[in-house]
Image (cartoon, rainbow, N blue to C red; front, top):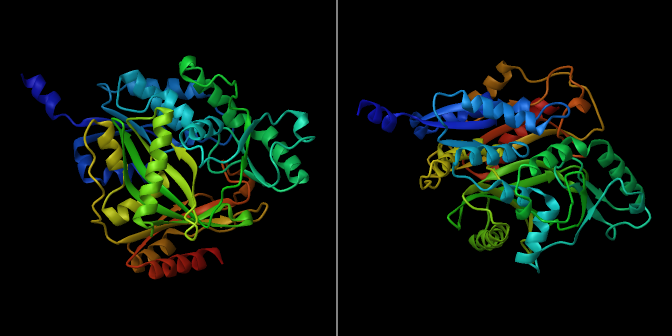
Length: 434
């Protein structure tokens, strides 16, 4: 009887794959975390190394770490893109935990497959897309789509190897870049696919070393919905607006939460993603989905679906709602009905500002010291800073960057109103980026 009582009162073992100190501490500040035993399985640098990596090695290392705990896990989650999203799906399958199936995760994360399922679900709201072998010399003789179009790898993240192609010379450059680097994620993705049921996947043989040419769908407004699927129902609990900068306006520069969006736009976006996820067979897992929106015409175009919560949004939820949205996803993974964010944070609005360099390359001469950060935090208590570079670092050494910029630092801020939030962002940016 005493043993049964201990089992009932023991903290839930929650494993977070590919986390780091910044996010582990943030998750630990969730009030409900008092009932969880939070364990990091692999570090962010293990799953996002500076160089190639072996998917099966990471999977086996994660399995060994989890097997080393004194009891089976009650939940396994992650907040990073591939390979973490794939690892989480397989680890949850190992332990019979609540999660989307690995096959559904693959269907969402394979850029070509996702568009095929979207075409079936939303035939009038799907861009033209063509799968291409970047090593095929015939591509140069006959471009896959009329210019301009986007060229992207089937599997990547952070807009890496994504190029806006306007003419033949840019197609040559984009294909050259793809050929040099596409295997970094293509080969691990192929290893992931080998763990899945072939009968549950498309039979087109388009693997992780392919790319896609995609019709342009950009609109003035870009936003993301954070949500989850559970027992066939879609729940949206947050909307975040994204701002862009740089060449082709393709580099993300800032996020704002909550987004200033009409309710009918959020409802229309929810209907679109629900139809696609239903077609894909995705259920019992988190997602965030990006949309382009034209406020004047009402045009709404789904950009991509990520099978995880967004780590970039986590501090924004903490500032506005009092805790990170890891809370909702951990509750879901534990079989509980997640609470909606409660708007009980320190500020009604929050933003993430991505300090970027749009130069071709460079060397970091100086980074802000802790004293400088503390002085600004005295003026802006919600300030959180993540330095992504070190002094003396060559920007070309940074991994998983988009094709047109380097991300140097992330600054999170809260404010009472949009205008004061933008003033705070400008002040921090001027202080550290002049």
